[in-house]
Length: 611
Image (cartoon, rainbow, N blue to C red):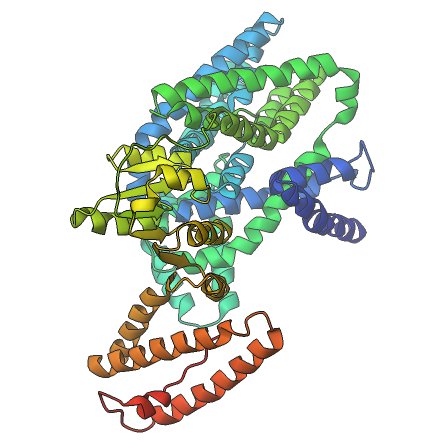
């Protein structure tokens, strides 16, 4: 790549990362689609800024290698062994089933049997980069369908060896020559895998310990990159997927003490190079052929997506034991074509298994199916969300009961309050605005009803007139305030205990003259702070005294600032005064502290509270 072209491509790529990806993420389409769109825009069929991306594509393949290495770091050998059934079971079935159907379609349209086999195998493969990146963006790699998708993709990478070996066997070369080459390639591949596995197991950790001992960050980064690209290079020597070698290196380091440091060093390189890979796919999209043969291209793309989606849906339900929603997500993630299909199709063309026209049609169809994968995932997610929506009643019919306590909001906080009341055999009624939460909790025979707790008719139906305490634990501050206002106005006799998210929330509740206000995380934070003091060598009784002083002074500051919380200048002034008192606290800490302080001693421990 010439210097001027290199700078041109670098500027375009960075512009795509900054502009196109940001716009795509803002539109809810994800980063992958942004990179693909940017590549198509600057490609030869539109703006023509990047007529030749061949050398840039070689660089972009490093992104896929780094992606598989990072994935390997998350999988210890023990976890990988547990996945063997999914890898060699579901993965094998997916490749064989998809290849058989797609190859059968190619044969029905006039391709020879040898050509049809290669076409079926090439189209059966999915994109590791797009699939895993899409799952990572949506935080679904750890979900059941994400784990099964990874297992299938891993098998597809392993299937590279026999597929590449099969092409010469079916080509124009003699079968005897090809057969000898196959056995030689197989022995070479097994030997390389053994070298990576054994060498990685016994050499990597001592080397990383020595490198870490230098205390030079760039040397550690260089060592991490050396391991990744070294393993990939060894796999390339064996005519195997380079990303498979990087994955094995990651697995061998998954249990090491350097795993997190290595991942943090690799992550920036992985993100940028993987983005370059997606841009390269977008640039290579031949829109001219799409214009010339729209029906044929559409038919091939539809066949790829439909056949693989149906096969994956069946595998997810039967082999993966996934429910319908997870099976659909699996199908959408892996339905498109894969980058390894380009390697297989190019090799098939070189061995005269494919004509030039067939090759171009299949390449553009695979590219389009890859570009459509993020859209399928997004559209499928929206469709599944729409399927889950049910007509919701305004609120449940509540039987005529006489609870002593009503709990509004049945999340983490409300459930703990309810468990204590149940243990004391105190009758209560819980109200929750989430249908899903109500349906989930009702499985455990809880006294919970659906509805908006700020609606007076629901409160009346819940028997609030005869209740003694109203516990407000909703996690939405606006709903919390609205409910408190309604209850305070219509039922002034009832005691309200309200949960508050922050100081501003507390002050708004104090405006309603609600005294039973409990701040989220405040008391748990005090418990943690006491533990820190004790661990630092302070006597437990002294730590408790200091925490008590802190709590009292912070509550006093909260009440003082309530008077001026809508005045930013006054709040700033009270914060500055609190900082002065904090300095006095530090000065007081330099002298011995007595237990059982009087009010004057307590005043020395004034702390700074911020609004």
